[in-house]
Length: 430
Image 1 (cartoon, rainbow, N blue to C red):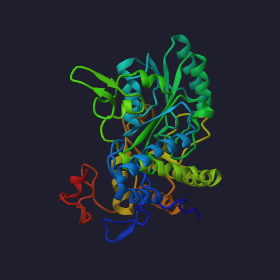
Image 2: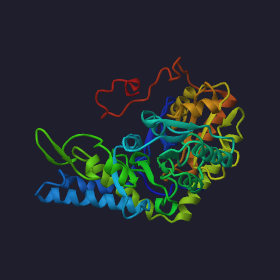
Image 3: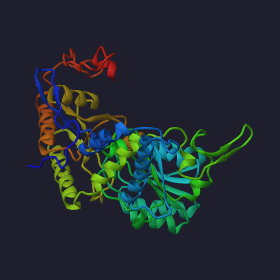
Image 4: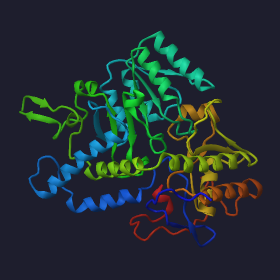
């Protein structure tokens, strides 16, 4: 029986059921936001007594905060295999990273039509050309090559792994295609990095963007790592303190990267948490990490495929590397009902909707929404089995509770935690 690989905060959480009592929470919504690793929470607890403003404080706490903040930059760079002259820009999340990079790209950007909105919407302002993914990965890479050959672009921006299907893209091939046609390549690593090591130096990836909240460090920081020249030539992402060398009422001399694009008081807690996650993930034995992921992913997909009326969404016929997630539809049951039912009657957390990838969902499911289940380092086989058992009961017997027009349980007797002040009902948290 596969157990969790690493302890996570909330791994022992119990949640109430509408039918009474509590059960251990089966968190299968890790692809949306991963819980904090235990090691990350411990590092944050160590830091908090020393938390202070960085870079210009003379006090001891400020010196400690400055030291760990800049050390975090080096840790992140090492974790992703950054080149010596690459820059690590701390940002809020992947969306923030690509909005920053969009201000610096000196030309058009080519993307696929399967991208998360974070890697689709920011490029529109500078000229985006979108390539439709083909039914297999080989043809998709060829279509990208044809588009870059048809008209040059400055950047190819692609996801490392789909947040809808979990299918991993052939990054080495896409890097070669981009560089052969004179373009740089930016990779959305938000879904890939929590499951696979990515060495941008070895691969030749020019930019990698990712979020701490998906990398078991949900403290509000992410990173954009890559070539410094475009970012050094771009106007500051935000105008404000910390991004300048000198200021008069008439002139501003801006700082170099990374300070140039990090105006305001930095999120030291977030950057230290992100570095702690990188340290922990970097210490994992590749075989144990891959084995845990493959075992749970196969268990999830095989179990879903065996259920009547359940259709797992796939994009590429030849995709052999798939993350531990699956999006699916259940015939006769709206996605929102499935998700609320699994939570209310089985204590299972999943995602439902269009997953910030509306064009891809439209291709795969038409007008319907889907349900997504995703595993992580804190997931066990028992969590996956509870999901599958709950779905089997739904498709064979239907729900035991009543659900309203919005698919929420009616009534919903589950109490909120006492500390959730101001939340007078479960709906007020939505």
